[in-house]
Image 1: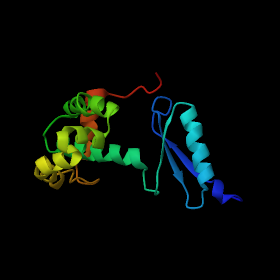
Image 2: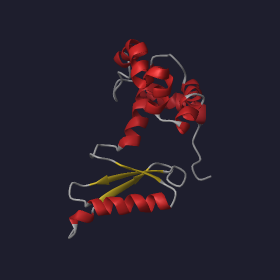
Image 3: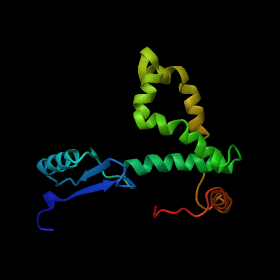
Image 4: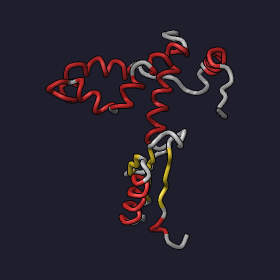
Length: 162
């Protein structure tokens, strides 16, 4: 590439024709002008660009989704809920809430007058206990076949063409 100062990664979130997020990842050599023009372009067509300050494997949105998936697999594998029940929990709680406000904004509101700090001071011990018991699952742990089969029983083969 002859003009390395123009290189910028633009990463949509799937399905890209529906999801407004565009993660913009400049290189250390990308000029501020290129970043600014890129952001303005995506904003002008109704997208929600976010400039990622540091390259990270999987981008930001995917990492958040995969953290939830890891915990979901763990909860199903431990017999806490079924695949369908887990989906109902997400679709009937975090899905609608996070469509309006992300985790920091939501939990800031949940802390009342003390905001996010108040929430953490109030229930931080419970949060830490959840984190300590969270998603201890890896590929090869033996969960795969049962979770794959349960998901297929619940939802069958997905038609992604309609």
